Image (cartoon, rainbow, N blue to C red; front, side):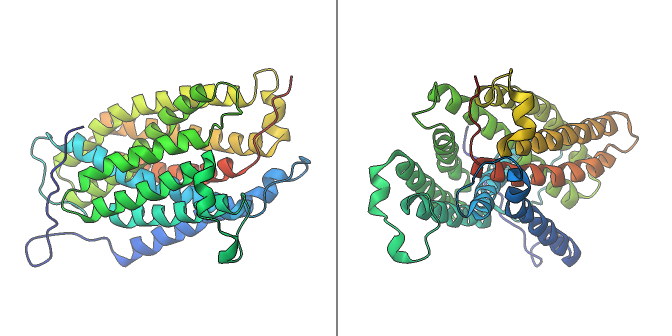
Length: 336
């Protein structure tokens, strides 16, 4: 991908920059707080009656993983949409303030906290003495955790620099690290699993973060025809992303839960129950995306498609939270 020239942000003195109101900020914080409840309260419901035991602090780890996924999605989505909009005819010059510096910093903090858990033997450290930083270099999981910490730190520095497009490379390193972390060498065909996760996570990040940034631009441009054009261009690419997410998700699920046992495990294991909740949410997101696409094509005002698109963003936020919980729960046993 070629580098993307950042467009200087316009201040109130230099030109018209429309800012979100206090009500939107409060609503956003409320949605984030509600999203955090999913990985915090989800483990008890998912594990109830399964006979499985989760690692200590599974709720907190789920929250950290959800923050990490969100911190990956937002900057990648911004870079993706900037590329989509580059050659858009009649594109207004206004740009919303980038969230990448703040999200990558949050990703660094989350990755650092997760690395401390790995250094303490996958337990929640309660004192600094329990954190063995040097021990991270002695294990595969430790090296992957360090890679994510360093990659998010570099991405944050790039986001604050004059060349924010350079953050694409450290963010790509985070995606690779997550794909490797999800499939240890003890797993059957770990490289195949890592490849599936790599595609799945990349497409999911572009879909989620991309839609969020498209809606921010559409809201900023307020009725400009370029907003509808950008939304339509994104919708065409999102259809391909959804197909890739579905295909890789199905393949990954069948690798974890063979077809002969998947129906049982979807209701009798914590991983299966959480996966089922994620599937239902993704189905709802797909319906909202279809609704937005129909409005975009048939409505007299194509920008009315932003209404179901906003609901789609909220549902995608719930998917991110459930995904964080899913990665923290014990992987199901492959029944014969």
